[in-house]
Image (cartoon, rainbow over all chains, first blue to last red; front, top):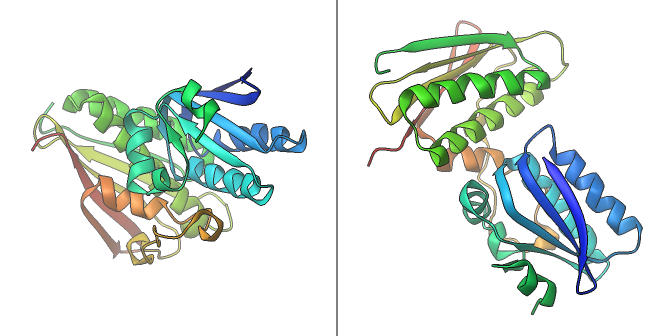
Length: 110
Length: 141
């Protein structure tokens, strides 16, 4: 799994690619925690190149989203595809997180 | 190819996830499973192994996990994951409440739900000191 950080339209975007499994989910959570400790309260997560996510990865998404919400922020997810899309839909996390089709629309929000 | 049965026995520890995943991916190629079903299979295997590390061998130690697959016909695989740990039936877990909002959602508890969603004919049995969880995955209608 690789995580690239960029800033688009004043929002921090994490581009997550590859596999988010029992081994790698903690790296994602640590990266998000590091953003939160910088004072960032809204994160855009681009999952367009995420080929795999298990329940261990979902734990991290829920944990980070709860931390952001407690700071009046939010976790926005975009470009879900393939297995990752199925997993978010089956667990109904797709109804909990704001979901977007593109990075640009996620950055704009609403 | 159809009729093939293969088994892999490893120590039940997190480091075994990679070799087991590679083992079932090889089976998926033999069974001619599409990529999406192969990923679903990897997910099923991971959810089961994580439960074994957590609940069947809670003290760590050097337990065994055995993964067996067969290919009844192209596009289908039957699998069984066995361990000799504490008796544990993951199918007894209460279903998660998926209607809760974010602040009330527990961070965990979704693994067995994914297992039930993607696996066919999911079945648990305790047999001569072994937990045996069998299931199928199929790309066929």
